[in-house]
Length: 201
Ligand SMILES: CC(C)(COP(=O)(O)OP(=O)(O)OC[C@H]1O[C@@H](n2cnc3c(N)ncnc32)[C@H](O)[C@@H]1OP(=O)(O)O)[C@@H](O)C(=O)NCCC(=O)NCCS
Picture 1 (cartoon, rainbow, N blue to C red):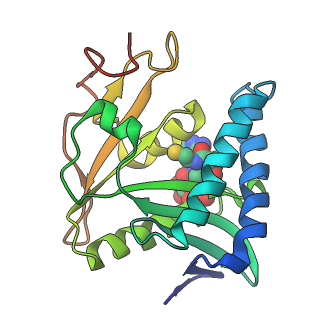
Picture 2: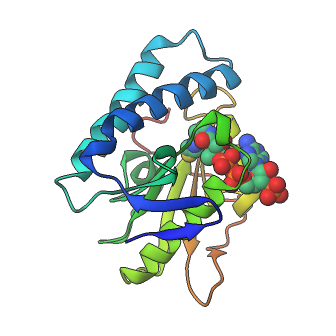
């Protein structure tokens, strides 16, 4: 299974790609943390890289996780995943049984701003429709990631205010699929959920 989007081919990840995806996550996280002014935070780097590496490996045997990659030739230039909503989405809302989250969107720094994430998201949305879903969740904690999703989707539907510290919010979007159109569920960023939530003071 796979689709051609310009020069990119999107396919489900296999065990033969693990070495390359591990390198991609490391490269991407180094670049991301530098952009966020968090280069010094080795613990955060290690945690995020290990989390992604673990998730890719789990996807090979667990059909509740689907990991896809964008290839140019044989090189992996980006990834995206579908999985059951994680803890951070669960902190902000109660996900409907059986629904999925889109995450693991990591594009190699040399291939960013070339439409790769856009193509991967379009592919993931087609997959979600094919699997019979009407909507999905997506969340973001890093400021530059949030900037990207806000520019694509508009304001987050749920904001976990100060979740990562003073002024460092966590954002969650619920995206509806259908009719070729994707619409937000419409709180326009005005909902701020930060009371009585696990992990939030
Ligand atoms: C954020 C990220 C996924 C974007 O991927 P990408 O492939 O560079 O994005 P695209 O090229 O598909 O971007 C499409 C559009 O968004 C714009 N865009 C790209 N990065 C942006 C950013 N950081 N902020 C705002 N807009 C951005 C592009 O200019 C483009 O707009 P245009 O079509 O009007 O020119 C990528 O930079 C990345 O992997 N970052 C590190 C990991 C990360 O933050 N992942 C998200 C975790 S929630």
